[in-house]
Image 1 (cartoon, helix red, strand yellow):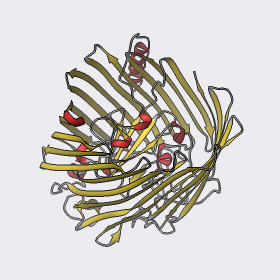
Image 2 (cartoon, helix red, strand yellow):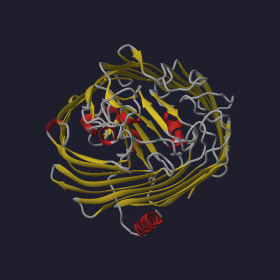
Image 3 (cartoon, helix red, strand yellow):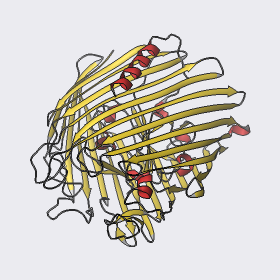
Image 4 (cartoon, helix red, strand yellow):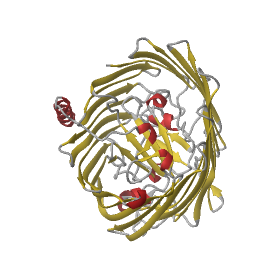
Length: 605
């Protein structure tokens, strides 16, 4: 762990001292990097993408909490910071959400389902996040039925050397800090970010007063270098080391989990006339340890080889196509397994009219266990007027059973991939630069959903195993989001999501039917600003495993924040989360934090 951090740090500062670095720049505020195979202006993408920028991240203590402010996103957590946290997009949980950090797939192949745990991620080391909703297997393969979360770490915003630092102290003995350094020139850039958090925490399990602490260190590195007019080289890397205290059972509140994750991606971009070629290789390794647990080790490994070509055709059309090979493996104390997937994909982007853009995407996956899978997506955007835009998407998705679902003692070798179909229709209207309103209707259905069945005899564990759920699972609903400037100092915003997620008529557990966010932001004088936000979540079906007396149900959170520009490059801020001290649970039998305060300082140089 220490060696990995040292090597990454040395490499980062060596690159910082290198002159004449460059990249092809574009305004990320108007570009989606996740909604298509190559970056595209949001105005031309039919995909449903929400952007969470650094200013939005500052309003929340954790990544998961920040993402719940996005329409259609909810969470359930087994405790406070560092506890297992499950995010849902339109009713589909972590195992249906692809997650990338600087282009590296960071979902854990050793998990019970291949997924990403959002519990330990604070916001200080993150720069920009895209939330891509709906079935996206045509772009990303398996684990993208619900959507994709694409995370970019801090980057240089201007030429030359720059940096930023942040320190924060808060309730529950929580302290966080981060340092970002960056160098950018006409020929490229490099950025290095280190972050740390330590917290005494709260008791994860309800009815227990022993606090469950958390500590994490994380380092990220990204770089690009234009070797010549036709060749660009680059890469990214991450290292994360975390230690979380857990409540092992209702009668045993002792236990610690240790996580060590490393990832790296290198790429080469070659321009040959009208075609741009990108070759890349990435590797992600996750090592989790649970001393004293029934299973003490979970090791996962992923290698991904990818080729992507981007060709400009006549009449403004673009063809993206490529190949991909992904190899995944896992190992525990007693079990192991591996599989690989070879893929071919293509996306045709068309502009049949000046105010219309279409994209047609097709993908073929050859899984070493499950064989062929064909998928596709059609997305379109029609800019009806300068103020009104219509978007529509139809797509398919699939999720191959995880290695744990197949090869663990609870595994079932007869499992088959889940298959999904998705459709959405949205309209957006801009009020002359004063505000916006967006409405999106969505529908997703999944066949052969995989869940743990405690009564199943399909495996030899004696405690049940994973099995296909009969019938079709359907999640449908509507998202509304809006923002309006009352004047040059005060702005109001809000969103509401209605989600009806069912299987064979029975509602899915832990999926709120109603999710509401309302807020107001105001500038106070020339240097101060503040915000007041209300989050209301209602009509939730608890898990059947929730203990008697659980508190899963409706809840309302009130959050406040204020900031003051101490200088032109430094600000102080205060954040109050759950200001009314709501006593609630999102997972039965597990506490959520009460009223909490945080004070911080952030500076740029």
